[in-house]
Image 1: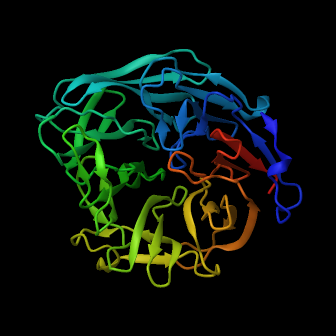
Image 2: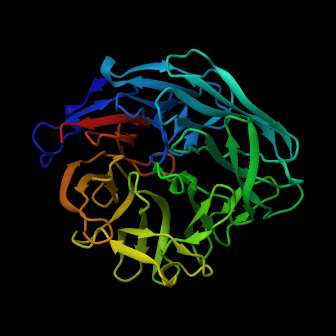
Image 3: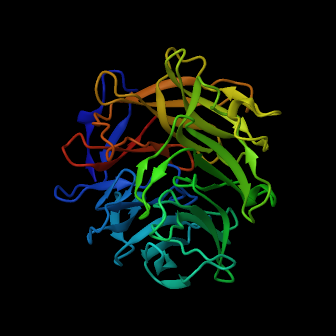
Length: 409
């Protein structure tokens, strides 16, 4: 790692430290997307990757690897994978294993593999290989999503992908759940609007809540027969739902779709709580807000108008909120977020939660300006260590995308 005091701002808090974690000048380095479960529970180790952009691996780049970053060893980076076409990493809740997929699919063909390896690089094993149609379906999964998610008991890993037949435009996408002990796969969600699911297991240890998945639906998106998305969101935008991992109990989150508020496309659970948070845009006033909410029974794709929907504007006390990507610590006490590129490079902010469903975020603290270009492959995407004492972000301020850490707040 390289100390980067030059990234501090005159308004940064005293004692703040910034470090650049990836340093190869000819290979981009990046954090995994900020909702991913890539930290050990003791906040000492995390996964990042090389030959990647802010939204996932660079397609077909043989240099792509998942790396273990050991914070207790001056953030030393150790490769954990050397296979081609790795994707969808998740660290087990006990911090022992990295689960990941190897995507050797083609549209309507090929196969994918779920593997795991201990974080010391030993005991690599194959959990399952899926070739041919998914059980109970005539469809094959291809074009695996760059994000997976693992249940709080470590027994199930979910990932999404394309279900098309290579002939039909605007075909179906799906979400699968892999059962680790049995090495089996189950398709739980499918349809033409699930091209960008962002699946996220609720991190609660409650036996019922631990089966809930937060999912994103993109209405009116367009894709060709090869699963290449040509329009991610139509006029109705995205809406967010919760589904049980057996495919039942489909619910609404009370956000967007009223003609004024729309979901930007990032959301996450509030730590281990059953409250979730999304970033919304509003036309009037023209803001980008942070709103928390609780799932309510499905009542059509009505978003904010969902009967019984409960929501709370977390950013209401911030003057002119302009927030996009964010994450919380595991206890749901702190939130880190980026703010828009107005003024150049954006901002990195820290805030404290109050009572869920009632209080606005408080104690807003400006940390620094990441000096990021905000190009599609170079988003800031901040997140916190589980204990909330360290923040992580991306920036291409050097001309090459790299991964950074900030601490001392």
